[in-house]
Image (tube, helix red, strand yellow):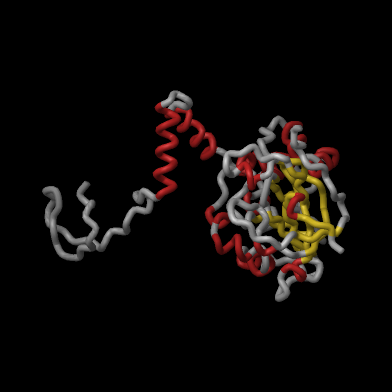
Length: 101
Length: 221
């Protein structure tokens, strides 16, 4: 039986999500500084081959939904000196996100 | 090569039949070290050419094409958005479609355009490497690729912007966009005041590369 070649989007704009705090080896597009942080889905960008697989000349399947997730700077950097509403928006693949409880 | 020895020499000397002379130590070249990745690039390129997959001229042309790209395309897009509300709407909802509508290369990446206003200032970084909308802006500036910019603009953006001469009002929101995957970003700067009735061409001259990365504003006439 064929494995699904793409994962279905699980989140919609406005959902609160948490970035998984995991530390796998290899080519990863989720910056360290954002792991374990909570943010809000800004938009679904599309569904793209998984770079963690593509980087090793493999097919990148299943393709993963890619989101732009918005984080409050003061929650990402406790010592942040800018405005209280300043944000950082980051592209994050769905398999790095979990529903925030 | 007369200068292929690596010791500094402040003594009078001659090389290769030149008259004896003195000069300060020469700075070493920075492109003559065959690192692992440089060796790999040369090996892969020579293999592709050797196997007839690419020609040396095609490689040269691709490099030339990249080097010849400038921020002018981006500036055209911004000037159009300043003068045409329908186009601005399209640009903000579908950047690639907007490029196409202007007859500009729409690129192989999805283009996300973020708009600077009185209340929001956007600035772009790629903390992981140097992702940049090259097809619209040309090659990224060296500082954009530097560790200093990449590591600092992400957590002290207002300080970094100040170093660029850009002061953001305390009550405006600063949004940093970290270009980590398949999107490429273009900032739509605020239209400067005093430009009412200007033509697109005249406006485009106010749109600098740095204003489209978001480290500064469009030029005020």
